[in-house]
Length: 574
Ligand SMILES: [Zn+2]
Image (cartoon, rainbow, N blue to C red; front, side, top):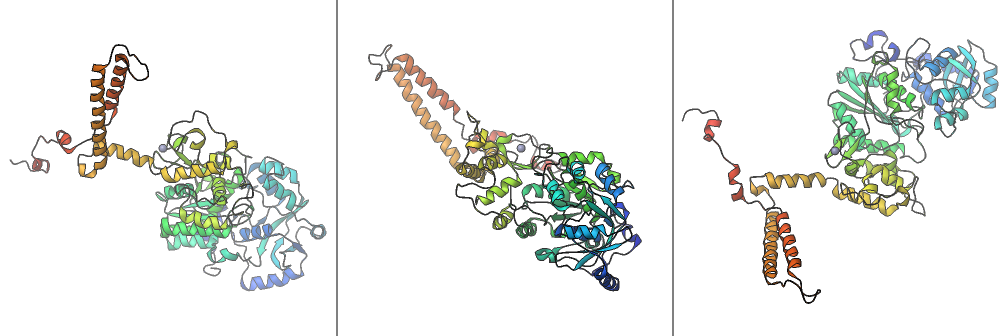
């Protein structure tokens, strides 16, 4: 993949339907002789050790993923981004790219550096990864960064925690040059850089539009698919980029998540229009600002459209449910340079018999199967494949192999309480007696639910999710079909039999009323006339309530034509 095409200078993007953010696709990867010379030079330079997150950021910058940034930000850009979400020159950029090394040895090196110096950045092998040309050195305030970027200095926020864990007191700004790329392990063979995707989309496939989709912790579910397929109705191509870095312990392992994607894609997606490539991005958990970053990353991969779901890049309850949507109100589409498509929460409606959002379905929670990423992972841990309307079996079967932890603990518990899982996936269960059923006299609370409830709700969904609409359809066809060979003869026979039997009950009771005395001598064994009459009235009403069986001869009256048939075919001669 490395040498397929080097990015040509200037006008490569002329005639493409998209341009890189800031107008230029950054390429800071050194090659050939230039690289060899730089590698020799790097070995003589002062050296700063960096962690994996920094190594990934370096690679992102060098390959253009974060264009127009050519390195780590100087103080002016850094502050401008932190306070205004823009670079100093006004170009939208939502998150700071800053480099403030920690550790005593690094601190000593930093103290010896001046503007204009070069410094080598090395990973844990102590081999240089990149060279940074220092243009700025400035004091770095962690609280300021956390509160501006995440709106909180609470260390339970993973992004805030990461700042305090990873960042030192002095930041270095300046352009970088990449000496070597890190190996992506199991994803190496399917990784794509921006230079590859631009070529694939616009040289090979000749697309006029591409929708990008960046996705986090969950195996591919039907909510994702709904968004993808909706987009593909009007957009030429689709780029799906599952994040494969910085996952939490209790997620599905990245390799399995990718395999789950691949198995659904090969079965249900148009091959020529869909591109799947893993994405290593370090800046996760940034909440709404991260969503903007993702949109710009998609743009740098050549996408014309950014497909954003509800709670994209959500972090627990730190932000409003649709905060990742409303942040786009701050920018005009022109300055973003990518068409952002925001989707509401997707669910499955068993009454509509399709996936929908609040915008397109008004049926209530009793009919809904909700799609919750956390809920899906919990079900996988409980060893239950989620309903096919929530996750395709091609996805969940593989995802279950990669879920961590697998199975439940000695108290039958998983990561979150089972009641929460039931509520997040099967909202009907708390308020209705069954999927699509009548309301419970007393609502259940999540706290009282056990694994048995999860099983019951999941079983109800398995058996009945596609039955509700089917039942309704059958009711309609029973009355509607005039071709009775299409109908279930046994239903007609059952209805006729019920009617006959009830007719028998009525006749018997009519006889009984005639013979009943005005007043009975024994209130247990003999009834008076008034009571017998009441039984008869009820029996007659039941007879009325039995739905009629329809027979072909009853339906003849529905069919007539004022003109001979051939006149309808256009023959006007008698
Ligand atoms: Zn509906």
